[in-house]
Image 1: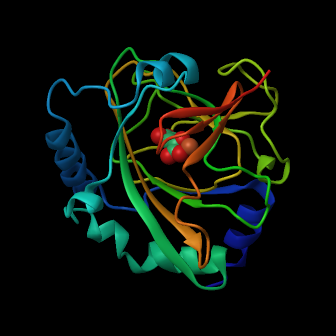
Image 2 (image 1 turned 180 degrees about the horizontal axis):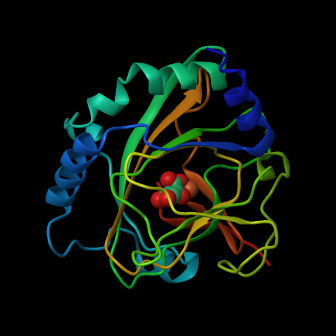
Length: 233
Ligand SMILES: O=C(O)CCC(=O)C(=O)O
Ligand SMILES: [Fe+2]
């Protein structure tokens, strides 16, 4: 099989999508595990300042950091990792596995870059796995602006507006999106409880804290210290 299109498409657009990558039974099992973790009414973990300023409403969970390696069938999947090999060419390593939960009625996530694009060579590869369908009814579409992994810093401006050239995606259960950490993306308002999961990888030698500072249109935010590093606009 010729897989060169994957690499070409990823590096041309900043992302590549695979539908039906993981089987529905596994996705159902994982979706239940994730929901069980969050329980019925999970609390926000981020500070009020972050939530109101960033236009981001998600509750993160890092299962492996808690010694709960519950998602190895994805993490160790040969095909999943073979595609990672193709995209990242040289050696790479896992960064972390993170689950995200957003309550029905919450705002989703404003435009951001997972990490600063100031040094083009330093980035994370976000490997998003969807354990349930994202539909018009559920809301929470992921919006990606193709090719912006080559466009430098997300311009300052309104955190959550439509941008000409954006692409709205409704991933189905089992879909995987490989997304470059410099590529601009956001999540639309969430109408029904929403889960997404990501298994991040980095080229070997990338600093472990590569995603600690996230670029939003109105600020640079540092998660480890819950701090607005820089106001923008
Ligand atoms: O939940 C999504 O669809 C995207 C989440 C996101 O922005 C991320 O994982 O960096
Ligand atoms: Fe992101």
